[in-house]
Length: 403
Image (cartoon, rainbow, N blue to C red):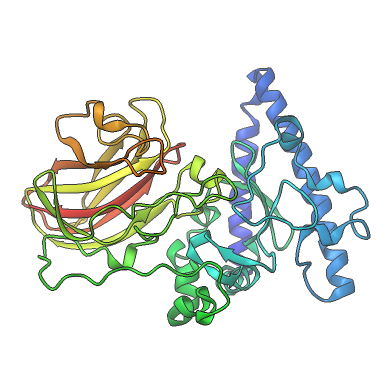
């Protein structure tokens, strides 16, 4: 793994150098962003040195970054990114240091994962240690999400930039193999639920697939990462968040198409991450294994973006090796599920499939149906990938039916 890590960081260094070559024409805002990033990198270097001193004395990692101050980190302001100092913004995904406010996400914190990948009572520390067993010391120990590219401080002290998922940069292993569900295997549900006691977050459960479900109603069981009946979109502190509990489940007909409705496949978006919801940037390999004329998707998105913005896509993988993309465009296929979207027009292949106004919510909850003609109707679709475009919007999928 050390050789893989050297290749990884060599590539990252080349990328950073190339990026630096184009900075001569930056405007004032860009210069400020660069200055803040450089200062943040300086903070991360100091944090790393403090963690190493702590480890030498205690033979263990700190439970929280606040454990470093003041003995190992005399200046507590090092724990605050310059962007936070300027804007007050933080991004900690629910991993909040209980002793000292800071701007950085300590991924090795000895605390429950909670809503992160629905890990529940599994400790962040335990998950990260298992990731290191697969890819080694490139696993980020501390992350800052407040710049155009996320800054990652790896376990061995390297600092590198990435998108929302650092795993995308590491091609030696499939990102799905680093998920807590994969790494903890058959014990995941029990551990995430805390062994059935003690309260706290638990792994979601989903209704069984109906024996009457047809083969053209794609089985998403193994890809669900949120429950319809349990809030998965975070809300303000002290409130319960947002769910789709009113949505009828099982085999249901929406907009003249019968769907298998039992759970949610959520993919990442910037606003969802900032609110504390951590979901994968893509879900790959949804089995299909058939020919069809068209595909019907029951889906929606959280958060709005300008009309015409691409927020995600479905990639069709054919048995002959070809691929085709079905882009998800905001305002054409979907809109924010809380934006009273039922009154606004979509493209000719999309329609409002279901909409309701729960008593406690200010706006409707809305799902959309989009029907796409199969670009290669004579070819067998082997599998489907569901991919986020990394915008502010966070697309989610409820069901797929083929025709």
